[in-house]
Length: 477
Image 1 (cartoon, rainbow, N blue to C red):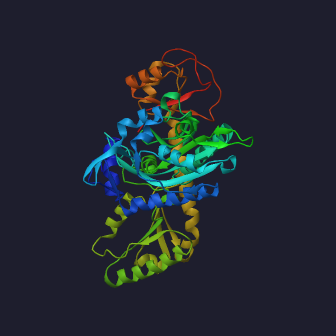
Image 2: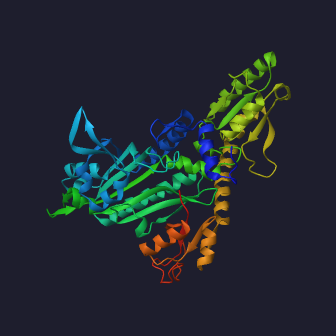
Image 3: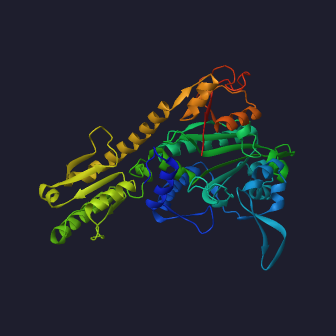
């Protein structure tokens, strides 16, 4: 593969195909998610779905095709999404009376049904979630990060008032941050978007932002407080305790297969993928070594060890059905595909009653390969996997800190965003944001929720800061 230092984009584009995560789809900008890549999504999906249901939400399924008129009801929403819409105008052998939009997001169609299903304050909150595919026409597609069609979940909720809706908005943000850190080992920064970066039709937008190994930012999940904007457009109202009709306050929030791209770019290296154990399709791969009788003996022992490891709740794969490939080829392949732990098992290992255990990355200097008694391997692996998960999070956090700096002058700002993130004061003007982007390609990524209060003047125009704290700027995917 192309080294990261030579061309990070080329490294990424080559890796996602070579590691058998995706293949390019038949339509420009689409992707076929292969079984290895889809298993990563299933692991993420299962954990997030559990959290969503535990918080009282119900899954539903809404149509892919949405009448164009629905989008026109909320002016800011249709204006924001118009460049990305894919529209069906012909079906069943004739032109349609009304064009149908392939959903880019479902606020409009779900808003239509919220209005039908909500009558009284007793119907609130209405907490819905949908696992679906969406279509957004991309001019510069990149697998997992920006594709014409992708998978995601989208939560849509309706509430009695702003306070309850904001609690929901922040719950979703906190949940996404926890999933990113605990599963993908991405140390994201959570906070609010500036007005210029808000979701079309939202009153407030919140985001989690992660730093990739090229210093760029990735928006990995968003949560939106929509106020009563969509309630007005779709007449989502309820009868309060006094019998008065009142508009509901709505939210929406989503996380997509983009998280897989973020995981790849946060941890991968020139040898290939580095998968956090909690999202690795195979947490452990056993490679038996030897030919003929020795190979058969090693394979039998590998299968026995694999069964013992599986009984510990570990996802394990025994690579014993490709005798035409050398052990060295398999070692390199599984390293490239990011398996956290590889176990090598040959004649000498078996005679010595040990297994050679190799971590994808040494968690301590010099601690990449070690021999462990065969009967002890299953019981030590859970601890090793947990240690590796924590190591990746700490490693990514350290990388982000090294590549983030507070700056006050324009020259320092332009130098900093060339390779990482700048923490700078900003006036809040969308026009000023546009000038910064035009000159540096950097945008305001997030107003960090946990940043200390500070005052100063805008790094670009010199006007007073609008946010009472520094904003994180960076180039982004």
